[in-house]
Image (cartoon, rainbow, N blue to C red):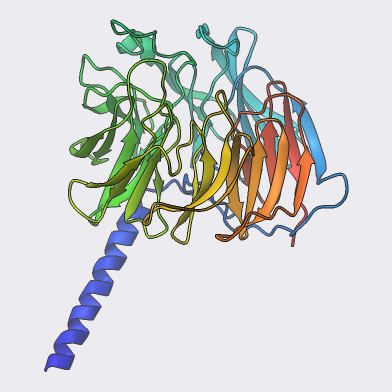
Length: 433
């Protein structure tokens, strides 16, 4: 009798775990193997799937398959079903172009008037990676234009000027104007809706959900102001949620309704930003939010209601704007700022708050993990290859891809690495294992 009860209980627990997993997976953007359809890849965590990478490169570095001149912007490339989408500013227009991944040939383009006028940087282009979902592509421009076009041919489906519709990016007394760099948070698709940190703190539209097919507002929630961080999907004690790192808080909401299920203070007013995305540990039970500017990083427990804070520190892994990589209980990422001091590449154990190894004076960089290897694109244009290791950093190859500052996030799809600086997009063909 006891054995029968244990068996039934185990079966029930397995079914429950499967149901919860399937519920979360149902929220994820559909993608074919090797695609990179949104910011930081298929699961928004910087991890590429179904890739095979050689352990080293030939003398002179990997082959560049093709190049293309691009306009202003820091937006990385999105890739799906043979198309690479680049979002940039050309003259007085924001332009999204679909390029054939094998040749760089232009397949289609869509464009609309650009309105953003920079106040802190001379770059006036978009910052947000395109989001591909089935036959729709969602674009969020630096001036607040949210648009949707067809993936097949670039036909405009709808667009909304959120800066005109909502009271966002307004300066507060005693601090510099917000939006130094324009709008820079990427939308998230969850529960069949487009979720975005709009940032209207007067009309309870800090976070809003939009209908995919029409752009119609479905719900508005919170008075949270916008950040440059992009939300992710997670589970809070088994329940699917969307997690936002807004201007001054970490907020978890139900995608269906916008109901707030937890919030924690994070960030500060003045010349500071929150820009790195939230990152789940490999188990999905903890969450890292990383920044810099003295308020550092926070580590939350998602296995309990309210997502209690496990620790908050500026000494473990505080990255100014690039998102760390989680792997087997560890995080790999950049500690420090690009504009002040010397940045370090680190591997940390978040549970023990322990730095396993660090590479001092490494420089600022963005990371991708694929095939048990790290691809590290430094802002000085150097690409570094290293095996994933919790004991040491031992790079096996490097190549100088650009001479100009390289801030846009790289994208990896079927052995092709798409990288850009302020004027050139390159498709780099990485040797395979």
